[in-house]
Image 1 (cartoon, rainbow, N blue to C red):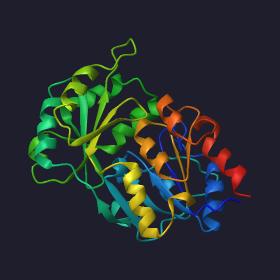
Image 2: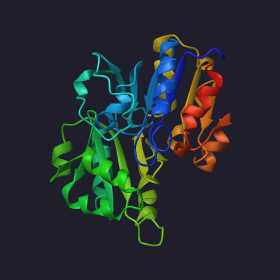
Image 3: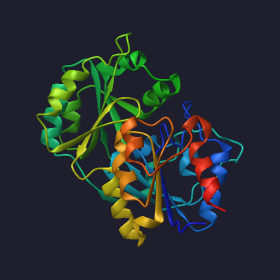
Length: 298
């Protein structure tokens, strides 16, 4: 067995199936890793409140990197364990106060609000992440149904968003972790107003813009990357990067895959993600994370 002390994994397109479930097989191997003393770390573009209960309840999963690295959280109390046969990942009942913030890298409020005003003129869904939660303008909620994604993803977006009437007023005194821009589809496989979003992005070079697994665009502060956050956590836990392994599928996972000793891309990954990885495993629909770990955790 190689010297592994930490396993980090993205959620959508990686640990979770397209139906947003975590299989019993995947939970079993992660439990085995935890029992061997290996730290388990969620690294997701989601807000803390959007991490499914079934993922948070995996034994040994004590740290969560959220919003592409904008926030690192630590579990501060034990959570009820789910039945191992229950592979559902669609419940979001565990409160954020079960975790404490370790570190946070925020967007400049004034500039983020200015960008959101520009994005708000387009036919897109620019959703800010604040304090572990995600918010959506009331007049953009109808666009969710027009997204070219699985129904399970549409439902996740509906479940994880709090609707706000006046977004700029709401955000005036808020600390913004990330802005995710989701797109409606024009019926021909094209993202409506995507080119205009990229033009707006050029006006805000202080923000990192990466593509997520559902072809969205995610904006965050320059230090808010999965790789930077994972480096911070490794230092906190006194674990060398060579002793860590990470799994991902999207552009926002590349910095993480390049940070650790072994970066593993899923078979369903973007081409640029595969090129940045040290190894490639099966797809998220084929238990790619579990398949890779089962071969090395012997």
